[in-house]
Image (tube, rainbow, N blue to C red; front, side):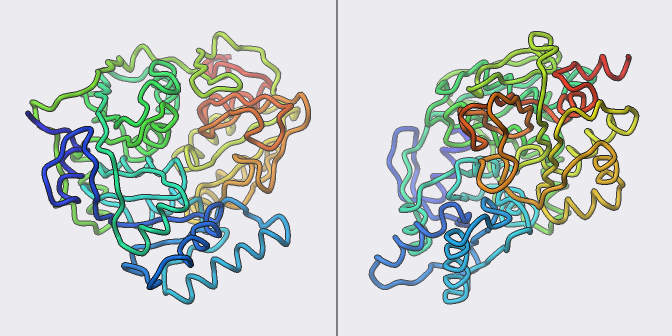
Length: 419
């Protein structure tokens, strides 16, 4: 019987041949800890005997969720993280550097064939480079920092086949929302989503990152893109060694298969308060929008900002929408300034926030008011997600968000462009 990508990588990392359902202990290639979990990870670590880290260069703390720091209590937590990193020599990315997943992607900490864990659920993003990435809790992170390995139950794999081409004005965020709508919130519970098909060839690394980022919204443990020429070029640009890449066997067994013709995907949203509440934009046109959030780890790349700026550059806005922009990292922010995107956003009344998770999870900035409607490029719209249980959050693409800034309501971007 052939093996899937997840079975092959976990076989290599555990040093034995494994199949779905097996319990394994596998070596990890990097442990990422954001500030939201950092204090609890450190507390558990301090209870371990013989306190030491397995490899200081393979552990990274990132201050991103509470940025800017909102109060003295959080400031103490940040200082706790800084002291730990200083004591053990682990990597530290300070506030303002960027969102954890984007920094892992940008800084070359992930590579094909590796196993990467993060104390944040959207660590599945790392599958964009044909690696295994998954979110873990504080206890598992602390143990992994000490031993350099962690236990896993080898998951079943779901084969997601992408064929065809996207229509104009449709983006990969629409694809990610469509996949979630098809599988539903628990349709791939503790599975690995393994992406296949000719439609992937046209997706760049940013596109793949967005799709893998949202794999967990179907309950998936991993989301894994195939290794191809696009991945290889990205590795060469980053100076990364792709020799550890694995490919699924032709005889690999999948729990189920989801076939998606990309030409069937339209501009879309996820309605409140569930990510799997998929709807074409045509079903919600005219919904008044009070706030637009552009950015976050899901759609905070330079490409995402460019897409939104391209539409805004050509149109005037009503000025009725509060517009928040969160670049995914300091590097993205810098490049967006050079490209003129930030000035375009400012011309449309935007507030440019520092790279971080603040408004996405309601931790430090951008909390909506009672009864307000938010249109966001983030990955979650749960009740209270942005800090107020009395507001409604719709998820969409950067292009749909830009159209709402212009019109003040949920609008099909095509209507704005052709109107």
